[in-house]
Image (cartoon, rainbow, N blue to C red; front, side, top):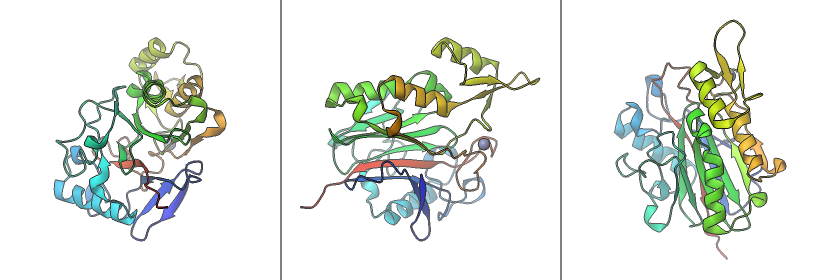
Length: 274
Ligand SMILES: [Zn+2]
């Protein structure tokens, strides 16, 4: 993953997805927006207690910097589920200008429709972007520890296979900045839930000595689910950027005690001019 300077703001892009000319994708940062305090400055989340006008302006700043139209962005009302929605023409722009029209009870979106930017909002949870260049299908996923244990990754890949004839071996995946194994402490409750959901959690949930706490490696957990679903290892790119360590560049819920903004991952199929 590498930074791209867009003037007032900077976004990040995955190396593996950058090879495709017909794709726009990015992960936004905190830079270049108009929000202040814990939301400083490019907060794109309407649902976190920031001023709605500022959030809308921030979204416009980002969409403009990318040379895109905010009205083509689609957002979900994320709820840590494994619910993956198929987005068609009628879903274009839902949730782009206000929270109320966001897709309800949805944490993943899949489409093969051009000019729809599927957005995922995060601050420590893992933003995952998927692309099948053969079938021209994209997906954006919100995978925190709950979504990971509920297996949103295999759910999304199954949708891509069933609805669009994708093959997992053709799918490219990018896992964006999120709380990494350096920082992501969880309690006994998460450890137990992980064991129930995943079976073996060795290498995924590791005890921290003498603390009763555990480190939950949500990167490794999601990479495993991608590989188990048939995605090739060489098609998977992990940003390897911890949002809590890098909280000056990316919003981190943990670093700001739960009151913070959201950055976003976005992916869109372009209409190519011939
Ligand atoms: Zn960290």
